[in-house]
Length: 73
Image (tube, rainbow, N blue to C red; front, side, top):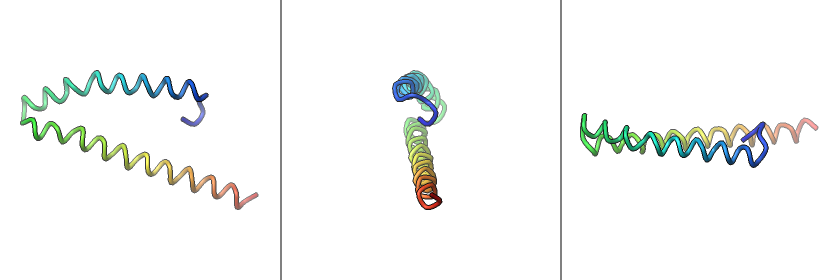
């Protein structure tokens, strides 16, 4: 994570993942009770796809910025 020491970034990511695992199970349960399990399981699928798109965009931006730094030197 930019701006953090490597160990701090890993620890922060670990805590965010724990919070995600803690809250997603009850949310899926509530959604499956309100709709159906099939519909509720679309939520983690959509969240994973959105996370992958965001990660891809961040990586492309970082690569573009790194390449721009090389050409301007």
